Length: 81
Length: 257
Length: 116
Image 1 (cartoon, rainbow over the protein chains, first blue to last red):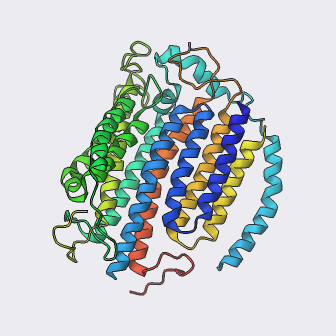
Image 2: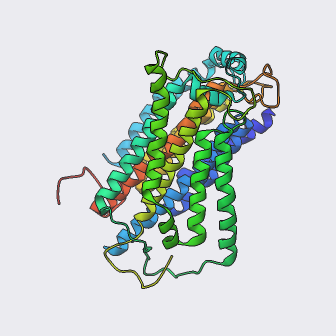
C-alpha cells in the first residue's frame, strides 16, 4: 500500500515537471491532460474518490479543452492580422 | 525586470526558504498519522445526525456549507467576468459559421466518430445527472455531476460539428441554469434565516440513510450546485468556441467545421 | 516515506514557480499555474490521510470503520472546480492581450503603456 502511494507520488512529481518542461503550448495541453490523469490516480490511492472524480472530469477534459480553444482563437486572430 | 534578475531573486529566496521548508517538513506530523480532531468528529457524529453516508458531501453542503456558498459565488463571478470580457470585445450577435485557418486541410468527420459521440454524449449526460443526484449516498455530488454533464456537451460538438452544435446550445438556457442554481443555493441559505434559524441550518426532514433524498437541506444545495456548475461550464465552453469563429471576414462558403 | 508527500508538494510548488518565471508564452504560464495548484492539493490530501483507513463514505461499511479526513477532501474538491473557472478567466485575459498587442510573450510585453 505504501509502495503504491510512493509510486503515485513519484509519478505526480515527474508529470508536474513535464508540464513545465513542455514549452510549446500545443504540446503542453496533452501534458496537462496526462497530469490530470496521474493526479486523479493519486487521489484515488489516497482514499479520496470524490476528489478523484472531480479532478478527472475537470483537469483531464475541460481545462485542456479550454487551452486548445484559446490557442486556436489566438492563431485565428494572428492569421486575420 | 529581466529573466536573469527574476531567477537570481528566485535563487536567493530558495536559499532562505529551503532550510525553513526542511525544518517544517520534519516538524509536521508523519504522513499517515491520525491528525485532525475535526475530521474524526465529523466521521463519528454525522452519519447518525444527518442520516447520510457521504461525509464529504455532508462537509461541503452542511457542516461547511457557508464556504461552499462562497465558492459558488466565485464560480458565478468568474464566468460573468469571462462573458463580459469576451462579449464586450466582439459584440453580442452570434453567427454559426466556424472559423477556418487558411493553411489547414479540411477533414471530414468519420462515421465512427459521429456514432461514438452520439452514444457517448447521451450516456455521459445521464451519468452526470445520476452522479449529481446520488451525491449524499455514494461518491459524487453537484460539482462532479455538473462537470460531467458539461463535458457531454462537448462530445456533441465533436460529433456534430460547429453549426449544428451552435444551433442546439442556447446561451439563455445555460445562463438560466447557472444563475438559477446559484439563486436556489442562496435561497436555501436565506430561508432558514428568515424563519428564525441559522444560515443553511438543516430544517428539512432527514430521511432514511442510503436513500436518494436523505440529508434534508443538503439535497437542495446539492441540486442547486449541480445545475449551476453544469450551466457555468457549458457557458464557458460556448463563449470560448464563439471566439474561434469570425463574423467579419467570410469563411469558405458552405463549410461546416 | 513519512515526509515524502510534503517534499513532493514543495517540489511541485517550486517547479511551477520556476516555470512561471522563465515562461515565454502566456498560455504556458497558465499551465504552470495549474501545476502550482496541484501542489497544494497533494499537500492537503497528504495531511488528511491515515494508514489503514478507508474513504469517508459509509455506504458499504458501517459507520464506525476508520476513515480518512473528509474536511480536506471537501476543501480540495471545491478548489478544483473553482480553479478551473479562474483558469478560464485567465485564458480570456491572455486572449484579450493577444488581440491588443499581437504577442503572447511575457518578456516582450513589458509594462502595458497607454499607446493606442
